[in-house]
Image (cartoon, rainbow, N blue to C red; front, side):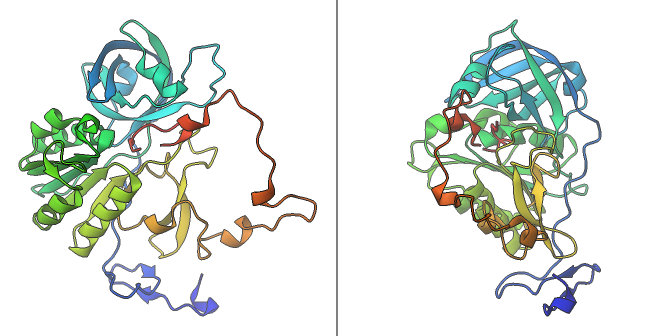
Length: 352
């Protein structure tokens, strides 16, 4: 979409040209994209050295120095699941929860065959893994107070970030929420680095009853940067609260990642670029960390008509091809479909 097409672009002080804002929205420049990873990913066998239950989840600790020594908060790893003879071809992508001494940890939510197999690994087992993958959280300027917001096991992706921020002298506040007490995650780890620290549950079984948006609304004005990981509706709400108060935010989105390296295009979502035009961005390569005010959350899972290339992607069906709603039922597959939906999430939560 250009000025010649009849749509007027607004020139910002930064030099960016953006579409006119929706009435009631902010007109300040958008947040900066997350930086590229500093190190290329590697593939190899990681040895499980620890497994323990964490509420409704399983935390695995794996020895893999090539990954652990270069991983940055916000990045993820992709596991081959089911063993060497498995028919489950797609990897499972999970956010890195912590690193140290040549090891990294992940929190697994066992939901279907692939994640259940992964959660069942025991010390001494080996698993094929690729990582670290994706873009990390950008760090704020020195002295910036920060707010971390985690939903469900997406909170695990914020543990390493919270520790890094504290080690660099930042004030860290945190809000962690879940549907109920059993689905809370990383509470003790984040409580150790954050003050104030608030827990919420939808059913009131732990902490404050309600959703994370209540305490986030109270704390966001005192923050200079907001970081979040959890379900997409939560990320949308947190990003909106931060943007409305002029605070930059970065979110680790949870989209299904079939390959983890940017080839298959299954994890795309609409993101606004510096030129004000929206494009599909691959969560596994351009993300999973995005500036919160760049993600078009309301359009995730759709093909917005103003998206760059939308006219080419919305091709009509040939006369002899069935419409989408008339397509035949797919043949049964050895790959369980219930295991292909995401966070997180994370990473980030688990993705295929």
